[in-house]
Image 1 (cartoon, helix red, strand yellow):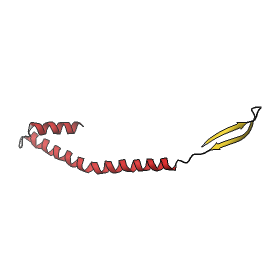
Image 2 (tube, helix red, strand yellow; image 1 turned 120 degrees about the vertical axis):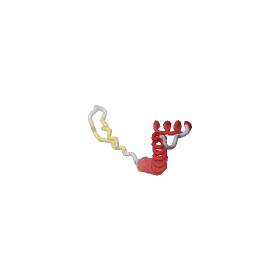
Image 3 (cartoon, helix red, strand yellow; image 1 turned 180 degrees about the horizontal axis):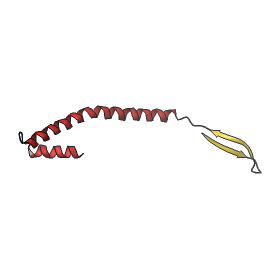
Image 4 (tube, helix red, strand yellow; image 1 turned 180 degrees about the vertical axis):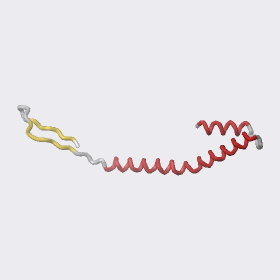
Length: 83
């Protein structure tokens, strides 16, 4: 909402002009964007948690020496953990 004072020829206030703008569409677009991001984060969290847990188990198995991890897998696991 904008309010502007209207002045006469002598510069004295003689009224006000009020302008409003409908922001319904903009608010709806913001809500849709928020909902989309929330859904994407939720849908990605499950698979990423499983991948991280698998990499953690491989790293622990490799550290114990009972099951050596191939260098390529070790490299991938370290990159995943860094990001």
